[in-house]
Structures are given as structure tokens and as C-alpha cells.
Image 1: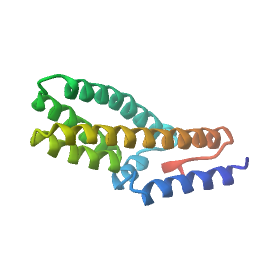
Image 2 (image 1 turned 90 degrees about the vertical axis):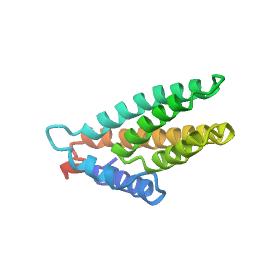
Image 3 (image 1 turned 180 degrees about the horizontal axis):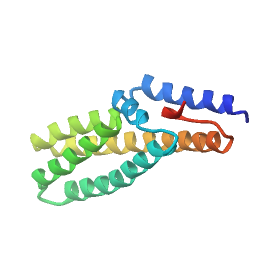
Length: 151
């Protein structure tokens, strides 16, 4: 496939992620840090985010399922998850974390359980979209094109 077509696919997917609220302006700032010396910077940062988030989701679920629920510990995990989501521009994940923390602070377990399912869903949706995006980016680079801040 021609580099121009791949770049169009890339741009369409990024636009979709913004339009659907998956990403916010923080992601744009992250992209601006990418240059020719580190053409896969965004992929590396987001891969770390996804790995860290998976551990956080496990810790959140474990804490929520232990009786009695340690809401302070749960809130600390959620605060970390919200912060890391915010730092990469994962807007929908961050927004669910905000709601989740509100239920946590009110010690409403049913609300927390619902938010757990929702935050997991948003995490996996975003991760799958970025896996597609990273695949397109690798194809662009192999074809000699540029991505993100390297344009």
C-alpha cells in the first residue's frame, strides 16, 4: 500500500479517536514530542501506559473484591490510573476514573463495580484502537514515510 494511503488511514483513525472522545489535547502534546530521532516515541509511551494500566486494573479489581473494601487503597489506585490516563490523553478512561473515584469516596460498592466494568471496557477499546494505529505506523515507517511530529 502506498505511503500516502497509509498516512490517510492513520489520520482517519486519529480523527476518529478525537471525535469519539477517546483522546484529548494531551495526546496532541505527546505527539509533538515525537521527532525523527525517536519516530516511535508515542508508541513506546503508550505501550508503557497500557502495561501499567493492566497492573492497575488488576490491583483495583483485587482491592474491590476483598471484604471489607479498603476504599482508601482503592482511591489511591484510581488516582494513579486517572493521572496516567490524563498524561497520555486517554480522555474516556480518565473520565470513568473520575466517576469511579466519586463512588469510591462515597463507599458505594455497586457503583464501583459498574465503573470497574466500564473502565475495563474503555481501556480495552482504546488499546485495540492503538494496536491498529501502531500497525499502520510501522507500515508507514517501513515504507519510508513519517508519522506524528515527524511530518
